[in-house]
Structures are given as structure tokens and as C-alpha cells.
Length: 615
Image (cartoon, rainbow, N blue to C red; front, top):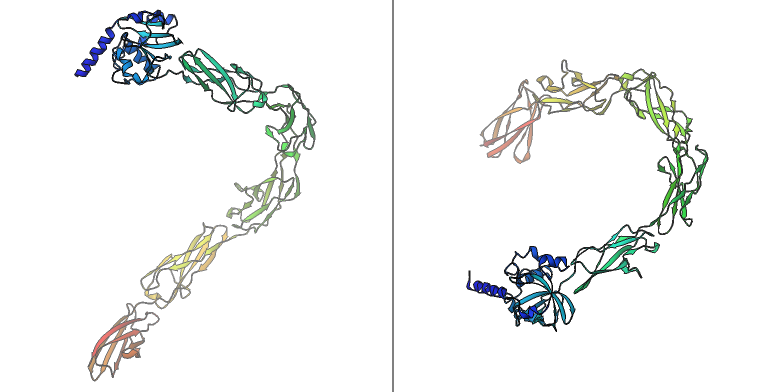
């Protein structure tokens, strides 16, 4: 332990060993001991269960400094930390806290004996400038309350004002009961520490005091309807400043009207008949009345008079009327009549017969015209083939399938309207359904390159119905190729020099077959193989020998063109795949010649460049 700590402990020990001085004894003891004081109404503020705890580093138990530190922390709200270094030995407190020490006693201040003793006590009550009541805990003694008078001796050497005590509100006041016009409510004071000695009340509306409303109870009037009602409680306690706390606002609700006589209905519940309600009677006569008719449990829009004519929408429902009484400041009250008998249904009238439009053919959409009905009605449909209902055919339109081919069709229409008896009618029959027509939305095409050895494929296009099958026949120059019925074909030597196409035939049950032919391909040709030999024998003359051939093709005929210096050209005939010719007057040196074969019916065009050194 440090020297300073040892010195401080010695000072505390010395302070706590000092017995009560004659000045302290010159007073009146009001009670002694925790239990005795509590029984007589003198509080120890809970110190009896906390005396074993050190406050401000004071010695625990019954001693004056630990008790006063406890009270300043728990009652006055100071932190558990000494406010100054000298606040240790009781005789030094007034000197250490000279800036807040005077001779004026107040509740919550500390009575200090530093020149005439070594003691501090808590001022609980200030009777006058010359009389105070204190509570204290004495070293090697007991807890007590004393009354001290200036004339009786033992008056404190000073009064230390650490901080003033306050009345603490832990639970706000509240309005007990539901504020309603004409209904009494009362104030709950909430919870306080310490418990105030008295309370005062002020009732307020929207934050403004209500004149004369200062009792614990209050009855709202109609002028306060919907406004925010609060009660402000003023708490008072001897030696404490008064504290005002207001409750949370509560809206004033309307008062209550009661029914004395229920309204009644008269009239017949039938479409077109008028029913009437009486007004009934209520607890106040000065009320305004309004009306609402109901069809079953549903309010009828616009039906707000004392009478109502039943409509078709009310068929099969009972009718009732409600009478609502209203008065300023009160909750509206509604009284209902007994229900009428169920309203009798109306009858739908057919103005024109149903009919069927469209072409009676497999796959062709037919449409039902429901006819006209009075009043307007919703309609449902059922299609029939040769007098038998078609499963699932309940839409206004119907597309016949192969199952109905050759049958006659008609449609049955059922008209319905809420509150009316359902009615039905049947259209006339169509002629017997003919075979359907397959529709081709996009024509078939050939894909692939039309050259020898390549594969061509038939794209069948888009068609309806999707269930239709497609069959194929390849054509060469518009004529069927025997056995060529697959969707794909490899171009053969037999196709060279010809155009290929294909016929697609679509078939579906209940439909007439349909055939469509693709556009023809270009002529099938194969690529040529060109070889060139050239020789210059001098004098600017060049001799050429050209050979043209193609796989699986006999030596072709045709012609070649030769392009040479200055853009000049010459055409030479090809016989059995060969051509020989000479060019004279050619420039000397290296010269390049382009030999182009112009093609035949089976061989495509092609070219070959040849470079010759002309001498």
C-alpha cells in the first residue's frame, strides 16, 4: 500500500473513532436504530442493506462519512467518486468543499461539524432557519434521526451544498378509463421517489388547461370530442422542489346512444315491389337519422331512403334495412330490421336464337352466336356432333377434329343472370363436316450446296395441323428420281448438269392430302482441273497446251480464254478436254497468262495462271 493510501486510511480511522461531541449531544434524538426509525416513519433510505458497501472509498458499516456518501449518490444523484481530494476525514469536508459551504440549511444538504466536532449528517427537513432534522450514522454507535435547534446548541459549523435532491418520476401519470363524452375518468399519479406528500391536478385538452378542471376526476363534454386529453400531476414534498409531469394524451371518444325500439319492414319481397322501413326509436330524440338497405349481407349502393324497390340482383336473398342515429359528441348507433322473405326470382327472355358461323370443315374454327337475352345475361356453351355432347367443347368457339368429320354440329347456349332462373336455347345444325385442308404457312426449302458429293436436305416448312406427316420425293429437272424418297440426298454424278428439287406431301387424318414442291436448285456442276504447258522457242512466240478434266466426267468440250499483256485476250476451242495454240509478238522476259475455262453443263468454270519466260 502507498504512503498516501496509508495516511488516508489513518485519517479515516481517526475520524470514525471520534465520539459524538457535546455539540452533537445538544439536540433531540427522534429515533435510534434502523428498525425503530422505520417503525416511527423515519427512513434510512435503504442504508441498512447497503452499509457493507464502501462509497467514495469510505469505511463500511455505521459511520457518518460512508452513510453521507451513500445518500449523496442514491438520493442526490452524485457519482460514486469523491468530488474533491479532501473529502475524506469528516472534519475536512467543509474546508475541502468551501466553495459550496455556507450557513443556510436546505433539504439534501450536509450538516458539517469540523471546528466543534468531526461529523457529517444528512439534512432531511428544514423546519425554519433555526431548526433542522438530520439523519446520521455514528461510528461505534447507531443510525438515528435528530432535531437540532440553533438556540439549543450543537448547531452545524457549516452547511455543504453538494447538489439538491429531486423528486424523481419513474412512471408517468396516466388517465384511468376510456375518455368518452359524458363518462368520468380519473388520474393515476404514477410512481415517484421519494413518495410525495401531496398531489395537485390540472386537466388539459390539446395542451391547454381546462378551466376549473383541477380534481382527480373529470368528465369530458361534447366540445372535447376527438381532442387530446391529458392530466398534469404536480407532486410536492417538504424540502423538495415541486415537479409537474403530464400523462400521455388520450383522444376523447364519442358518447353512446342506445336503441329503445327497433325499426320494422312492411311490403312484399318481390322484384319490382316496394318495401318500407319505420324509423325506430333511440335514447335521445334530438338525433339525425340515415338509412341503408341490404341485400343479404351486402349493402346496396344508393339504397339510402326509407323505402326500396327490389331488383333482380336481390333474387333469392332476404332484404333488411338499417337505421342509423347520430348526434354531435356521440357514437352513431345503428338498428336493423328483421330480414324479409327471400326475394322471388325473375325470368330471362330470349329475343333471338343462337347460331353458328364459320365453315363446317375439319380444322376450321366455328363460332357460336349466343343470341340476345333480356335482361342481358352471361352465357355458357356446349357443342354437339350428331346430337351428342363433345367432351371439353364448352368455349364459344370450337375447332372440329377428324372425329367429327361427316357429322352435323350445333351448340346449346345456357343464359344466366344473378337472381334469374337460368334459360337455354339451341342453334340450328351445320351441314355435314367436310375434310379439312392442310395449311402450309411457310413452304418447304432445300438446304446445302448443290455440288457433286455434297448433301442436300429438305426443310418441310411450317404447316397446320402440326400432327400432319410429311413424305418426300426428289425431282431431277422436275421429274421423280426413282427410289429418292428420303429427306436427305447426296449429289451424285447422275445429277451433274441437272437441277434438283423435291415434292413434300402432307397427310393428316380427317384432312385432304396436300403436296408442295420446293424451288429448284442451281445446275449441279463439278469443279474443273486445269493444267497448262507453255514453251517459248524464241522470237517472242509462246506455244500453249491446255488440258481440262473433272472427276467422273468424260473429257469435256467448250472453250477457254487467254488473257495476256496489255489486257488483250483470245478465245480457244476445247476438244475432248484439250486445246493447243500459240501467241506471237509477246514481250520478252517473264510474262503471266490467265487461262480461264468457261465451263460446261456438268463442269463449273475455273482458271489457271501460268508464268512463262518469253525469248
